[in-house]
Image (cartoon, rainbow, N blue to C red):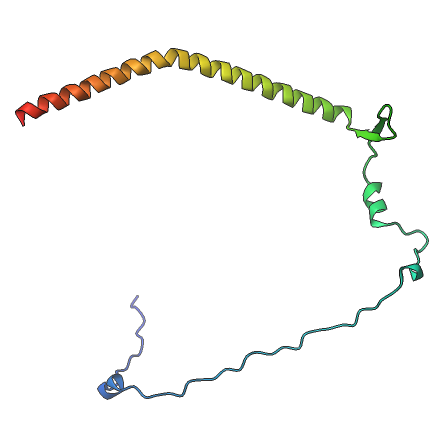
Length: 141
């Protein structure tokens, strides 16, 4: 399949060297009619709650189970207590994370004890090799 043939034309040389001057367009700034309203002020004592309606807070709390509360001794404060499943999950997670942290710390210390002499010996050998090669190259150079 052949590529499409597009029409072309050549401008005269005088148009290319001396283009015609065109007037600069002037654009007006856009304008819009913004909506507006007059607020209605109603005194709060004139508002009535219809029978059978609930506030947003009541609707929000309606679907949730109410947490158990415990009276804190010698105070008038009641504190909500989470359910048993949540407490077990939180305690288990905390215990596992502490055990994992202590185990990892102990393991890291043991690894440092074992690998430190090996790494020091390796560093000495590499340093010895580098120093040995640099002194041998200088006299022959």
